[in-house]
Image (cartoon, rainbow, N blue to C red; front, side):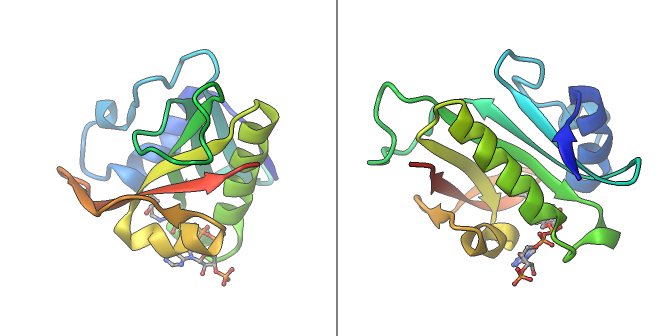
Length: 149
Ligand SMILES: CC(C)(COP(=O)(O)OP(=O)(O)OC[C@H]1O[C@@H](n2cnc3c(N)ncnc32)[C@H](O)[C@@H]1OP(=O)(O)O)[C@@H](O)C(=O)NCCC(=O)NCCS
């Protein structure tokens, strides 16, 4: 089951999965508490097993599907617990983010995808829109986007 959750609940899972070994502050993202930001959790019963968040942030790349007046959402903090991977929770979270961004009038959803996860996004209809780049302490990434129209 996927439902919206608080920033604090999100960070509790995001931290160990995406910033293991780093202080909790490194798992707090700009805009986590901003109006318009939405956090989603995947649950098995009462247990949180995955998270993803969307933020109202324009895409840095010029993308034809992103008219100037339409809002864009950035997807961040996509993470599932290692023991549930491959069971569809990541896809379910992505689908919830796509649906919410669309409901909020966005033309595109974009993200900085870890290169190791780029195929996960590609399988779900995302495409690479820029050259590979490095995020210090995290590693290589591709900017990817998903048209919503
Ligand atoms: C990437 C991640 C969120 C995927 O979550 P998940 O719960 O395993 O995803 P799903 O079970 O919904 O997988 C959906 C499909 O994508 C595939 N997939 C999942 N992770 C993949 C990856 N890293 N590379 C390629 N394909 C992947 C699955 O095999 C599945 O394919 P199928 O439909 O053909 O069976 C999870 O592996 C994770 O948290 N990884 C560590 C953190 C990370 O890299 N997050 C992304 C940051 S940009």
